[in-house]
Length: 199
Image (cartoon, rainbow, N blue to C red; front, top):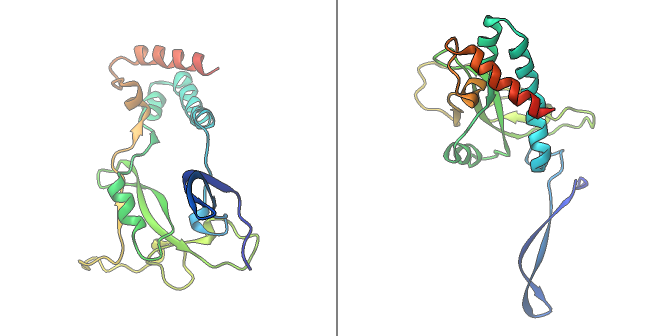
């Protein structure tokens, strides 16, 4: 049975009015959340800013109210990641790939990072199944959802699928360009100013 759509999208383009071409809006159905390709939803700029500030303001308060050790730890926490277009397209171009799952990890430098893995639809009969259970990592076998369930041959030089580490994350320290342990008081003043602007 066809699943209900969560909405539609209009894009300006060329349509037919009778036998004549004309300029107009073309309406497309969007994917529903039963399909991996429909996961997520558009967010306005204002809503995006508020969501980001909600998260960052908690970190900023923890920084301002913390001791020196806490300040260093908070300032080095990841607040954003960047993954290049080439990496995204490589992952999405794989057979059956309908989306991307991001795993939090520690990289070869023991720094916090993220591994990007392609996912495909997992057919689930349970209407109450979580969104996470509706997506299976590419390369899983049987009923497993994650690549962590696979037995890996370390010396296997040919990979079946693309996996990408996104590289160094953006931290609070990066955003405010403040050296840790050098001018903590100046950094704290800058953060206090930011906090006052968030309220």
